[in-house]
Length: 256
Image 1 (tube, rainbow, N blue to C red):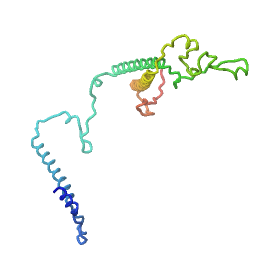
Image 2 (cartoon, one colour):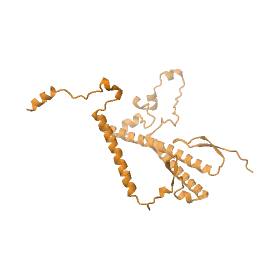
Image 3 (cartoon, rainbow, N blue to C red):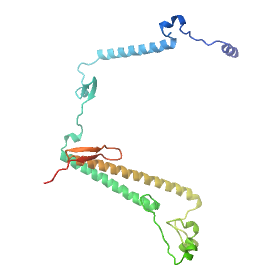
Image 4 (cartoon, one colour):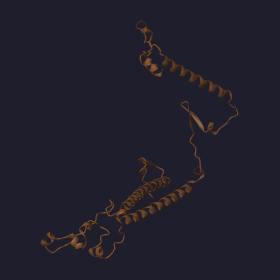
């Protein structure tokens, strides 16, 4: 029976709503059911909103009060909050604010110096000799003649194997390789674990470098705001950005 129903539906024609006849084109667009449904839903939504507002106005308490009534004002037909000072800064003198900003700058500088020291320790442990902030070292060997230059063997001169010549640290000699056990030597299976650990340490180093940069910017912005308390006539040369403080130009004043 179900197969008969499917076959019956496949042979049916789809229902299409008629379009506006040519003789009635001057009356405009012929509204379909979906257009009526959209218009009716919009109408009922507006009616329900008006009904809810009327109910809210009827049930309003005439003695109701909240602070935004006196802390806002009308501007161009819209309510705008009044600017007012809140918090402990509104009750402090200029001298107290200056002392607090000085303490903030000292604290930020202390954290920045601590991060910089941690970065130096990390660089030392990671043997970061090719960093962009350091100049690449050069090791020059001197010989007596051009013949010795042509036959000069760097691995033989450093008394190590050719595979370790390019290393600038932890380069054992032939005697160490043959007689002693190299300190820090690892099994082949743990090379992957050490590589992952080294990757984590480099990521931590990158995060600490970014933190030092952010702390430096914060310190410069605090110092700028502290300096603005002593200066009155100023011109802003450059606006403040997330990565740099604002730059001001002050009027030159002769000191007596």
